[in-house]
Amino acid sequence: MMKNVSSGVERIIRALLDTLKPRKPGFDPLIEDDIIRMADAFLGGLPVHMKILMPLGLRLLNYATLILMFPTWRTFCRMSREKREKYIMGWAESSIPLRRDLIKGFKAIVLTGFYTHPIVLAHLGMDLEAHLKRINVQDINTPPTVACSEEAAKYFTELEKKGEWGPSGGLPGHQIKYLSPKEVK
Image 1 (cartoon, rainbow, N blue to C red):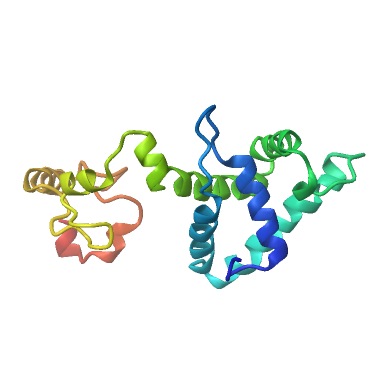
Image 2: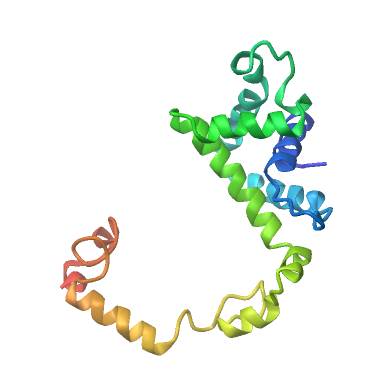
C-alpha cells in the first residue's frame, strides 16, 4: 500500500508499471512492489503543487480512455496490456506537451526503479559495489569525498577562467547571477 497517494491512484500506477516495465523472454523478475515503494518515496518528495497535480493527471490518463478510445467502455486500469501499450504510445507521441510529460515522468520512475534493482543489475552483470568504489563513493548512502579527480577539476577550472565552459558567458544558464562581479572575471 502506497503512503503518498490514494488506493485509486495506486491502482493506476500499478497498471502503468505493468505497461512500462521492460520485459525479456526468460527474464521477468517480480519486483513490482519494490518499484512501487520507490515510486511512492519519489511522489512523497514532490512539491505540494505536484502532489495535487500528479494524481489528477493520472486520473485523467485513467478515464480519458472513455473518450480517446471510444467505443471502449473500459478505464486504463481495466484494459489488456496490449491495449494499454497502444494507449500509452498515443500519450507519448501526443502533440500536447502535458500528455507527453506525464508519461515521460512515470517512464523515468519505472525505468529507474527497474534498472537499479539488485536482481536486474545482477542479470545485466553489473556490480554496484565495485562501480561505487571506482567512482570514489564509499557506499550508496555516503557522498563521495572528492567530487571528481584533481585533473578533471583543474581542466574545468581552466575552462571556466577562459569563459569556454557552458552555453554562453562561461557558466551554464543563469548561474552567473549568483557570483559577484569579481568572481565572474
